[in-house]
Image (tube, rainbow, N blue to C red):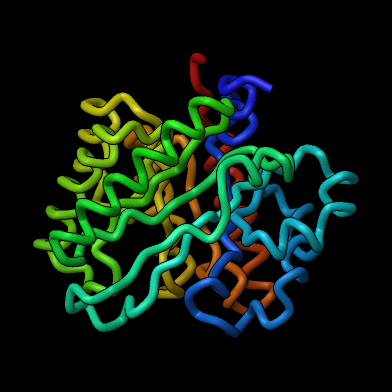
Length: 260
C-alpha cells in the first residue's frame, strides 16, 4: 500500500475526518468511560466517525470488528509519556512499538506525542526519535501524526503561542500530519496556510457545554483543518447528549471537501 492510499484512508477528501481517540490507557490507566478498552468501537463505530486512535492491545483485540467495518480507519499510538502532570521538565517519553509492527498489524497511520516541556537533553533525544520514526514511515509508506504539545500545561495564551512554534519544529522533522490542541481560528488558518501539511485538531478533556464543542469544531473546519480528534468530549458525556453532539459534529465535517 502506498503513502497516498493510507493518507486518503486517514484523511478522506470528501469530508473532514472524525478520529475518536481511545488510547488514553497508555497514560491514564483506567479512565471513566473507557473501563473496557474494547467497548468504544462497537458503541461509536456506526455513529459517523471515520476512525479511531488506538493502542496496540486494542488493535489486537478488535481485528474481527474492523475486518467487518472496513470503512473505519485505525491510527496506532506508538509511544507513551509519564510524569505528564508535573509539568516540571522531568517527563519521560518512549516508543512502545515500531513502525514495522504497525504495518504488520495493518493500521492506516501511526501517532506520536511531541512533548516539548522536557529538558534540553530530552528535547534532542526526542527529535532524534521522531526523525527515526519519520524515516521508517517513509520507508514503509505509512503516515506519522505528530502531536506537538506542552503536556500538562494550562491552556494559557503563552502556552498556545509556544505550541504553535513547536508545530513548526514538527513540520521540520518531517511529520506527515500534525495534531495540535485548538489554538483559535486565526492561528489554525495560519498554520494550515504556512506549513501546508494536513492539520488535525485535538478536542482535549471533557469541558464545557456540547454547544461549545460544536462551535470550536466549526471554527476548526472554517480554518481549514483536515480532521478533528474528539474523544472524551463525546464518550464521557451522557449517551443521549453524546450521540446528539456527535451527529452535529458529523454534519459539520460533511459540509466541506478537499481537492486532492
